[in-house]
Length: 133
Image 1: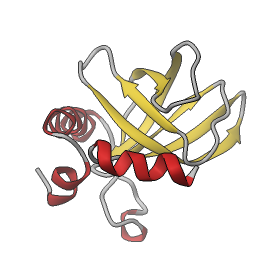
Image 2: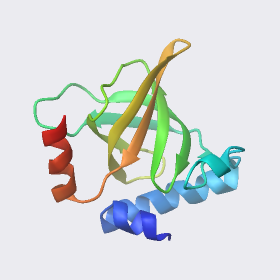
Image 3: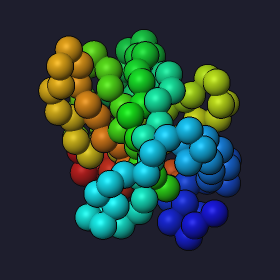
Image 4: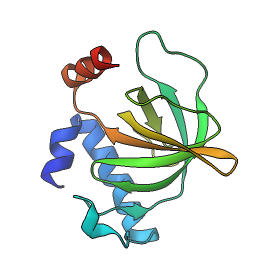
């Protein structure tokens, strides 16, 4: 496991990211723009459930489909628009486990929104994001 994954999540989150990334490396393609990003990104298509993980935000879980993943984050497509700095929990039923992240971008796509999420570290770091939103 890379140092980035170790820094960005709890022990359980690290294991989850490691499982997800291993599957993406096995089944997906490496990003051709690897030189422009600090971490290799792999295509990865799997169904996930996304929920808000932040005080004052709620609602039912949303179905989404991942597009790609790296050790520091992932992107998915869904029908809902997200605001930057929103804290979300992502769970892939087929793989178990969940991770928490912060929305970094949300762009309209054809019939959906493409959402980029950066994995977050422990509860203390998450509270900093709550106050920044």
